[in-house]
Image (cartoon, rainbow, N blue to C red; front, side, top):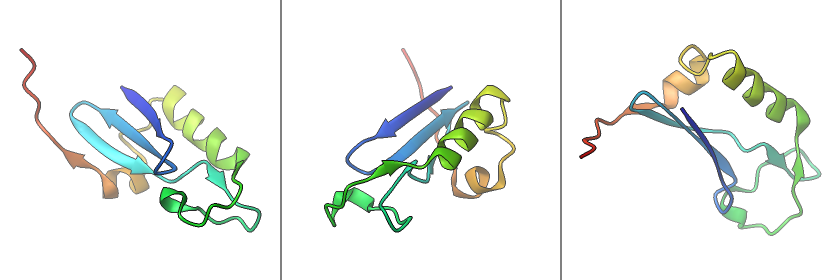
Length: 81
């Protein structure tokens, strides 16, 4: 299981059992909008509700059951030597 904040993309990468998906940014600007790839240069603030939802998905082992994650996920087989 991996949950990684992609700082420059302002999104979260979720990895579990060979599946990976991008989760919406937990950081929003003053108008409640994401700033993908920090293009607008607006100051971003932690959106507590998104952050809490992500935390709840992680601690409840629900990453495999959330429809938003499943719809955007892809499976990639990896061979580790």
